[in-house]
Length: 252
Image (cartoon, rainbow, N blue to C red):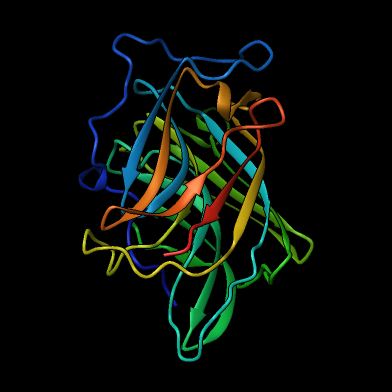
């Protein structure tokens, strides 16, 4: 069983890129101060936050969450993905890892996966995921220990741990994301699949570059998932010194 396509392609962002002209790559910041530049971005398939910057800005991203239980109608097939990643917001690669809470023909289905796009996504059968499983996931750029262009994706649960290193030579490291997604069809820009009814999920410990709270990144995109002008999934403001936020599935 494979994933259903790239996460967010540039063509799916309905607002100009929010890169700050001339902004330097950043490292550790002082205690939390809300990002000075936050742009609300409507998206067909993402809800959450993306930190953005010039090439080379981001070396890691991490977050934790509890796997949401999905409510499935009889015969329903729908999808919801929860993940952390580098790139993908304004570049043509994505290095990411996460989990799904899906409805497959009316049956709730849960699993973990990773993707180094443009290579296809891979399900992680060695890691057991179910509703209420505690998840911690991370993506790290590791040129010093594993060679240039190498990323390590990792995911940890009470049911098992997973770590894999892979090359992504074209990666620009211009964004870092913590996202709920309605995946896309057929590994390409063919529209989003139906989003499962997952209620709400809280991401905690969301950091970039090892120690920087995601909410303190100098430039942030707040991604609001919309369909036909209606909000489908909405991120909250940050709490816990900029490292926690929730995404809520809105009634449609």
